[in-house]
Image 1 (cartoon, rainbow, N blue to C red):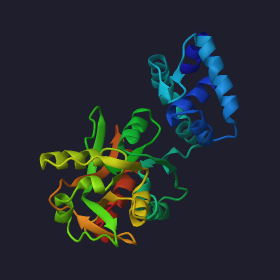
Image 2 (image 1 turned 30 degrees about the vertical axis):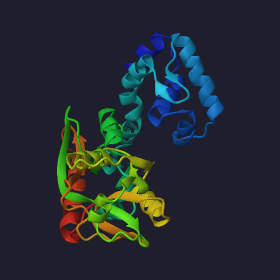
Image 3 (image 1 turned 180 degrees about the horizontal axis):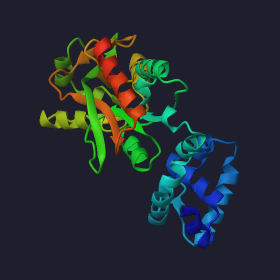
Image 4 (image 1 turned 180 degrees about the vertical axis):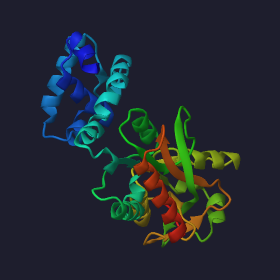
Length: 301
């Protein structure tokens, strides 16, 4: 067993758990916020330090945070165990088929995901779910580690390696400008000095696809500001900080205080569901509800 292996080498299981959260969340302060029970950052730091001392190896660089090769090796070994604890507890309690762990970008948490989850709850008594706010990179890593059951994300440059996916629909890229901007057409933007228009994007792979499309048009325009969500992008555009790259639905609303240039001649972005292995009945039910939402609403995520 994993615990027997760990104990045989003198490692404290609680120290390993704390290191797991530090590695998962990308630092000590982030781990303190993400651990599901009360513990302060100094306590985490001291106990992880004791783990490093017991191993005689440094597991991560503090500033900026980065796992060492030894830390990465240890994290990859323990992540499937600690990541599966919650679902294992549910299985012991006899309700594993009623708990669904979902990873998705923040953009879909507010409108579409609650609708799907509500409909799912009407059909499955006692249905519960856990949400992880994440982009495609984090979702694929969480699927590999057994920390989530499904991911919903833009499928841009999706890795292979056993991850299955189902495309729900294609979204399109668009550029937001402040409502007071003198620009009236996107062609005016391409002909202007782009250095005078800071580019605001989210992180992840969609901006990379946008930059590749620009390069094919012999246009150089690098992001000046990278934010965590499309909501923040639209807020910064509204306040006049630059031009924002977002994903838009065919009939999607334009954020207040902005105007939208739809980039119909740029590559579409497939949005879909990811999973690993055979689908459970609960996973299949979620997929059915997501497909139904796309059909009924005529929109997607």
